[in-house]
Each structure stands twice: as C-alpha cells, then as structure tokens.
Length: 249
Image (tube, rainbow, N blue to C red; front, side, top):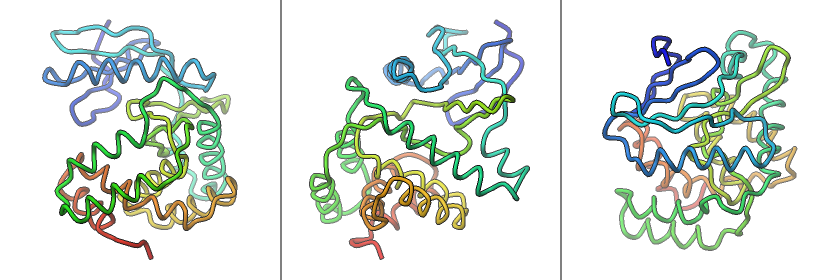
C-alpha cells in the first residue's frame, strides 16, 4: 500500500488514501484495545445495513496499528455547506434525516452510552458535588438502546457524486438515548462557534423526532462533562462551563 496521499490529520492518527482504500494509521503509542474496538464498532454497524465504509483489514504498518476501510469518493456535508451557503436548509434536513436513520437501528453488542458517560464523568476535574449531581441526573434519564454515533457532525458525512450519503468515523459509537447524541451534535456546532447552525439543527431534530427541546437540553451538562476529558484546553473550558450548569436555561 502506498501511503503518500494524506487526506486528513487528526489527534493521534493520520488518514491516507491508497487507491480505493482509506488507511487510518494510529500513533505508535495509541491503545491497541481502542484500535480494535473502533474496527469492531465499524464491523457491527455494517451489519445494521447503514451506508458506511466497510472494514477491510486491521494491520500494522511500520510498527503502528492501522484500520483499512473502503474509500468513499465524494465531498463531506461540511464542505458542501461551506461551498453552497444558500443550500444550508436543504443540507441540514439531510443531516438530521441521516441521524434519525442511524438512531432507528439497534446493535445489541455495542458498548452502552450510560456506562461510558458515567466513566467519563468520574474522570473530569469537576467538584465532587457537581460530579454527584451529574451521575444522579444520568441515572435518572430514560434507558434506550438506539445506535448513537457519538460524533455526528457534517464532516463525518460524505456525499457521493450520485447523491448517496455515507456516515464515517464510528470510533465513538454506543447504544443509548438518541437525545444524548443530539445534545452532543448541538455542542459540536457550538464548540466551533456555529451558534446559528446549532440552533437550526436542534429545532429541526426536535421537530422531526417529536422530541421536546427541554429534554435534549437536560442532556447537555451530562454530555458536556463526559466530553470534557478529551480535547484541548480551550474545548475543555467551554465544555466545563456547560457541565457546571445545574439547570440549563
């Protein structure tokens, strides 16, 4: 495999295109368990019938773990939104429809969202009182078993030339409450300073899924806290402000 065509560089990983394959190479000190879990998530999601790139191999390249998948030719929804601002409403409709399609699936072998969030909240720098409040709140939220992407944003949706959408990057996939996943998407828009898109997204998600906005908002401090343990200092500061809100207003 030739690895000279870099298509993306992320924290602790570099993604290459090699002919019709996408090769995600992880840093040498990246957890083997996390690499294998990501490949397993992707393989399990394949079985739901959703349009996603198929896993072709898990291998080692120059002493580093790598996941080889199908390469999906096309543009991300994020690119399309930038290139065609007049079509934002149309793209946002497609984006929300895709998320609801993902959440219509079940995948019993995926890790549970609540377990992951409880673990992450325990790792935060928040006070014991705030952590207790968040754990209690999380326990009180309804238990669901829907597929949750965990990082559903427009850069993780690729639209092929024929219009077929594919959802990529399943490393954070879990099974749980769809509104928690919606809260995560809202916070991702906000994190990038896209408050207008965040509002438009939340309005549309709630309308299409017949979900009360207040219910998604109740998840936001919980989701923000669980996300604050990763990312850079600026992101952590932003998320911890959300996590410290006792009641979202």
